[in-house]
Length: 79
Image (tube, rainbow, N blue to C red; front, side):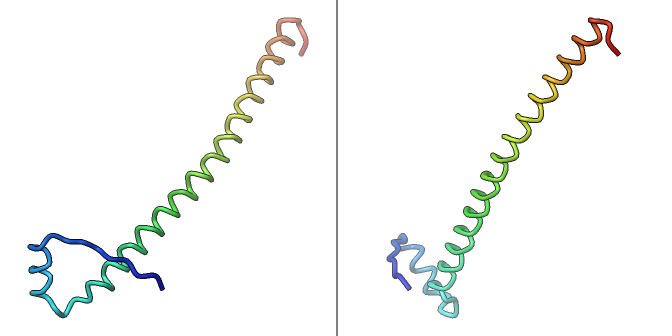
């Protein structure tokens, strides 16, 4: 496991010392882990939405082409 060092204001450090039962290192580790996991999930969802947008754009374009062809056939008296 990698170690990091945090700086907190002195008043926060004094407040933390009032609660020695709290594993501050574990708490910070858990918060960092949860945030990193949420960011990774968000990144994956944005990636999936990007793929979906490509499909949506393709489908819309296909629909426009189909409508344009149908309109032409109707004007030409077909169907």
